[in-house]
Each structure stands twice: as structure tokens, then as C-alpha cells.
Length: 165
Image 1 (cartoon, rainbow, N blue to C red):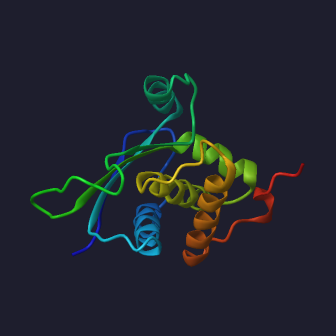
Image 2: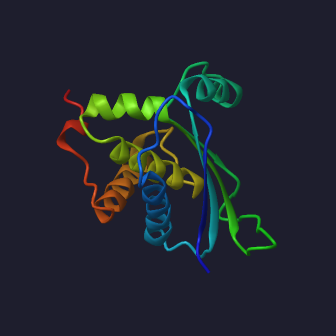
């Protein structure tokens, strides 16, 4: 029984490159595999523009500005609701601003695909209960997991990603 990744494009600002949906599915599956998730799992991924993600960011986090990705986990403490029809555990929703992803890809000098894969992996870890809001060890651990999964996907982090102090 395989994982279900439902992908919806709800924006018209950025053209979705061919192969991006496959890459997102691979990214989700790679995280679940890396975390030895007892699946199958269902994840929903939605592409939006900056205006829409700013609304959601304001609504859910009181930050009235666009962000690159928002994660809406449905599970708690490793417990997930099941979709009765498919037997999939419902992990939650990932919302990606394609506009922001495009801006960041240009900023870091890598492809939109690479950026979206990173955002998907990052968000998937959130859906599985990882957090980086408090910084410290948890943030470092999350970074390490992102790194490991991206290397598995053949997308190692580029040098330009490291922020010079």
C-alpha cells in the first residue's frame, strides 16, 4: 500500500515545471522512508501565491506577510486519523508559495525544483512532529535530517545556502 500525495495548484503566478509533482511525491516518500514511518500516509500539497500564503500566515500565525511554506499537521504525538477508504494515516497539509519559492531559488542560485524539494522535505518533517521554532538542538537535528533526505534525492545543499557571519 503506497503513500498518497495530493497536489493542487491554486495559483497562476508561476508556471509549474514538468516533473515538479513527481519530485514532490519523491520528497514526501523519502522523508517517510528516512523516518521509518509506519505507513501508508496521505499528504496534501497546495501551491499558492504570495497573497494567499500571507492570508494564511496572518490567520494561523498572526504574521501578515508572505512566507515560503506553511505546514498544517493533523497528527499529534505520532497519532493520526485514518482515511477509512484507503487506510492511509492523514498527516496534514503543506502549502507552498510558488512565488516565494521562485524568489528564493533565484536568491540562492539554484533551481525552482531544488527549492520546492527543500520546502517539501522541511514541511514533511513538521507534519511528523519536528519543530525548529525554539532553535537549539531540535533545529540542528531538523537541518541534519533535511540534509540527509536531500542528498538521498540527489539534491545536496549548495554552498550558497550557508549564511556567512
